[in-house]
Image 1 (cartoon, rainbow, N blue to C red):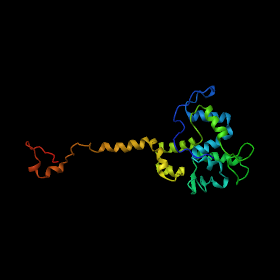
Image 2: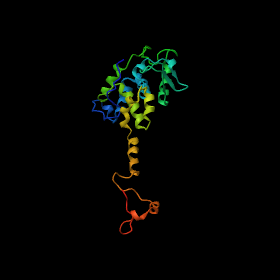
Image 3: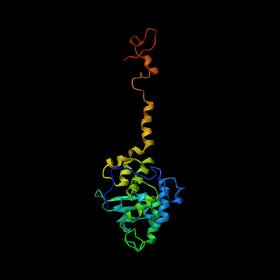
Image 4: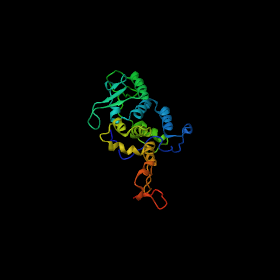
Length: 231
């Protein structure tokens, strides 16, 4: 498997899809809807792979080497014995991922072999032979399978999930790798700057409360008996 592209963040629905000659895609106005339509039409046997990637954020090497003993549907958990950072990691499964794995389980030849098989029952080795053409047909530019992992992380951040939790779900060794998604949390950033509204502006005089009138007025009162501010 090629190394993960950590130099950029590209996620589904980041841009509008480009024009396509496929007339039946005209009603799909966003990237995800367009991509799903192409996969269902031209590569329906790979839709479950797509769902698992989009809803777990697994690395391709983790996903395509996955075997059934690593999948615990009762606990809604996938275990990666040795991840990229050298440690065991556990990936929780949401309802969409669980549903996909249940269908894959029905298609499996046994409970110990590879999870992802081709139409001949052989282990799948990758995605490029079908996913790259699908993205191109859908009019989604500059988009690879790794971008599904970026989509997983980006949507978590945009939903308000804490960056430390996102880092754990992504299997990042350091939080610095997750920080590239931080700008996608506008609500969190807005809340941060909104806290300044309750603070006095720089250079403005402090507010004088009722208790201030009990201090020595010989130094504080102005010529008209008005309370003066002492710097």
